[in-house]
Amino acid sequence: MNDTPDLRSLRDAFGAFATGVTVVTGTKVNGEPVGVTANSFTSVSLSPPLVLWCLQRESTSIAAFTPGRAFAVHVLTLAQQATAMHFARRATVKFAPGEHTDGGTPPGIDGALCRLDCTVEALHDGGDHLIVLGRVARVAYADGTPLVFQGGVFGRFTPLPRARHVEAWETFDGDWF
Image (cartoon, rainbow, N blue to C red; front, side, top):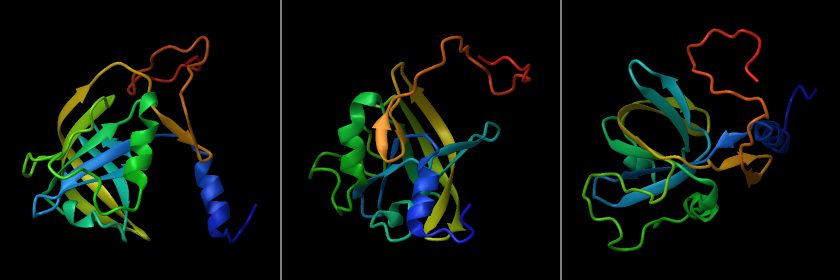
């Protein structure tokens, strides 16, 4: 056990946790569309419907995610690895000129497994990141295979042979699979 982990050790340890892959989109006050890849997304609450994700403080997209601003979280499918990499780039322009012209509406990612339309409820300090808390206003989803990220590589989720669907509010009876 390392008592004072360096950045590489932390990255490796954090990377042991498999996550889904999302692209979060929004618009700056001037209407410029932005998008970032985030695997820090998680649900927070069903009532009220809240989610959170984390954004690097140095991000050029930060102005699109201030309290009260609309944003959309897109859960990517297994086939959207290129989309994940495109929005993970440190580039100021993620959408082609004229590609998104809906004014203040967050841009959409075609083919996403799920889209959650949200409003920034609050921002919290998270060291070199901002923790963005969002209130979900609308949800759309489809069947498909989610894109998963673990250990620095993309992959897929494979259910165990005897796995069954478990609702979050079910009482654990010792036999989920």
